[in-house]
Image 1: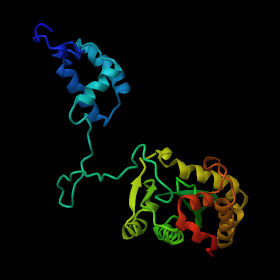
Image 2: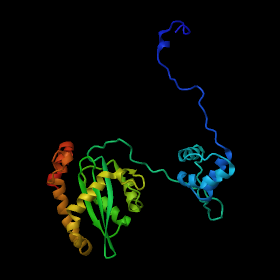
Image 3: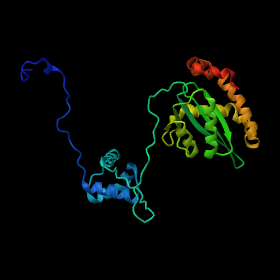
Length: 281
């Protein structure tokens, strides 16, 4: 405080972090060997590197780093010591690898009723024959729709999307889906034409589309398992039965997270324009 001329602010606690931090020092021969191994065996993990480096380090008289230290050595490299396969264009010249960045679902964002529409597909197989269901659900209200398809070609999923958009009282602002090919091409074109934004889940991360996954379980346990014969023998009849079940699911079936009320009642409370659904035929 005396050094600061009696200023009381000098008594305030300050960071005790060191002014000069220690920088890691790694033998460059070890770094070069790690890079060589990851080029020879692309993207080899730190655990396997730890085993493969043991005889090399003993021969060179270098202390073998721990698995965690090996991971930090790799992470400090600007390119993460990753080696991408060479791609050539039509003239045999190296072609840079370009990855398109897809818009992902933001963390901690809660959507309102009918603001977001989550979509997913269910595949059923019997005697080598495949049938698909494309399911749509509003995560906020649990209002859901579904239709069975003979295949997951985009012409079928596009037609299903168009039918759902015609049925909803208002257009959703965003659609959430995985990275499946059934949601590209014509399906994506319809979203662009309707000016509906798109959120993608990360690959192999179904929990990012948890509401759709949970509805998929419900519809299979409550309906599909009991009408599977129709799914493979009479698709039109199956869809007719499915429509009847969806009326029960949306208009009568109590939902615990909605206070034991059906999705349609919840929508009528939060979206006054949904009143037209009572007379919709």
